[in-house]
Length: 215
Image (cartoon, rainbow, N blue to C red; front, side, top):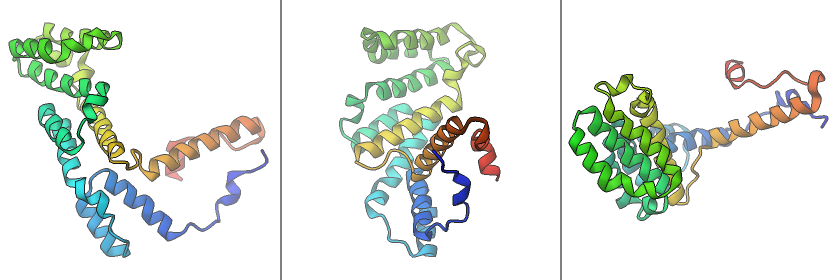
C-alpha cells in the first residue's frame, strides 16, 4: 500500500457532508433543541422520522441514567415493542440497575425479593451466573460503593447501560445505532493502524486518536 493519508490534508470536504455528520450526532444523542437550531442555521431538511421519537428516547435514556430502570423499561416497551424480550442481555442490565438502586437505598428485603422474581430466571443460562453473583454480593456490604463491585453502582455503569439501550432502540426502528462521527473515527483508526503495519518504520507514526483530536 503506497498511499500516505497526509496527501489528503488539502482535499475540501463538502459542507453538506459535515452538516449530516453533525446532525447524526445531535439526533442520536437526543439534543432536540440543538437540532432545531442547527436546522434553522444551515437550512437542512428536518429529519422528521428521527424527531418523532427523539423526546421519548431522551426520557428513556435519562431514566436509565438516573437508575429508574423500571420506568425506562416501561417506556421502552411502549416505544419499541418486544425489544427487551428479544435482547435478554439488555433486559438483564436494566433489571440489575433497579436491583442496585434497592441495595443502595438499603431496601435489602425488597432487593432480595426482586432478585428472586426478576433476576433469578436468568441464572438458568451460564453467562449470567457470574454477573448475578457479583450483584448479589453487594448485599453483604453496608457501604456498597466501597465494595470490590463498586463499579456496578457507578454513574459510568448506568451510562453504559443507557447508551446501549439508546442504540438498541434506534436499531429496532431501523435507524443507525452509531453516529456517522463514530463510524468515521472507527474507520480512520483502522486505516491508520493498517497503514502503520504496512509501512512499519518508514510510515506515519502510530495513530493516536487523542493526538489527532488535538491537531
